[in-house]
Image (cartoon, rainbow, N blue to C red; front, side, top):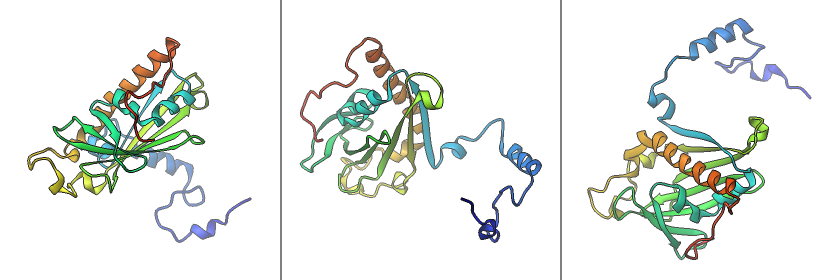
Amino acid sequence: MSTDPSRLADLPGLMRVESIGRDELVARCQELTLPAYPHQQIYGTYCTIQQHVECPPEQVYEYLRQGHHLEEWTYSLRDFEPSGVPGLWAGHDRLADDTRIYCRTVANPGALTVDYHCSWDQGEELWMIYLMRVIPAALVLGRSGSVVTWTNCRHPHYDRNPHPELAPRPDRPWVGDYWDLFYAGHTVEMNNLKTILEHRYAAGLPVSVPPVRAVAR
């Protein structure tokens, strides 16, 4: 099977072996490789972090897909209960006082992905999307355990609250006010995840634990 390079001949800006030589490619890549990068350039629109966890991928996935565990490894998400809508939980984000957060978990066991669809103040438009993937470390690092990746995309609502009338008070900080700290804050939470999973797995304890309260599934 092959493709016809002429199909792409009129597209400006493509860098392919048919259009530039290897030396030119290396020179261009060297230009793009900097000794340091501005924080805004790397994390201004997308925030991705990753971590190795010494725990089998199936157990890491099982832990993540059960949303009540968010109360363990996140810094501030607590008190989840059924919202009355199937699959949707309501809880509190203690990052800001008196702030409700709504969350739905979308999990794919074949791909080992777990996505948390969330929002502050209301549960109809879940625009804060936390995309997580569990990768067998044996495949990508040649070692035991798992690699966990976590990506956030800067939805326009991070820059402006779409429902200010639902805020508990006018001076309540907005979640997007913290965007520049997402890398650091999520790294703290990823380290929490790693610590919990590695402790339980190394001790021979069940990695996943039942919820204290019944929660929406």
